[in-house]
Length: 112
Image (tube, rainbow, N blue to C red; front, side):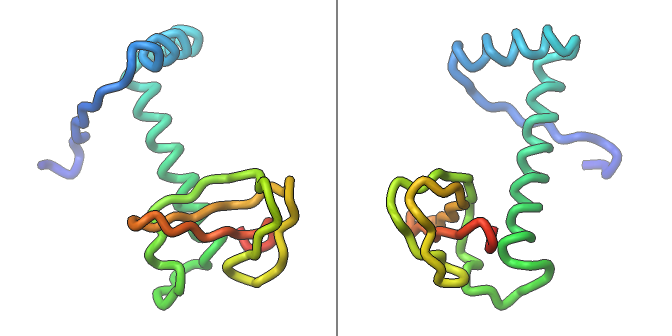
C-alpha cells in the first residue's frame, strides 16, 4: 500500500458502545470513524509514553520486555513494586503491566 494512504480496519462493537460513540461524535461535530481513529491514535500514544516512562527510552535488555499491556489501577491490597521493590500501599494508584500468559507486574507511582 502507498505510504501516503491510510489503512482500513474494521471491527465490531456493541450497540451500546456504538450509540455512545455516535453521541460523542455528534457532540464534537465529527464522524464516528474520525472519533474512533482519534481514540485509537491517542491510546497508542499513551501506551507508548507510559511504556517509555516505566522502562526508559531505548532499554532493549529490560526484564519486563514480555509485557503486552498496561493500565492504571488503585490497589486493593499492599503490593510490592516489580521495579524498585518498594511497598505499594492499599488504596494507592499505580500501574499494572501484563504479559501474554496473564502474569501481572505491579509498579509504584515513582516507577510508572
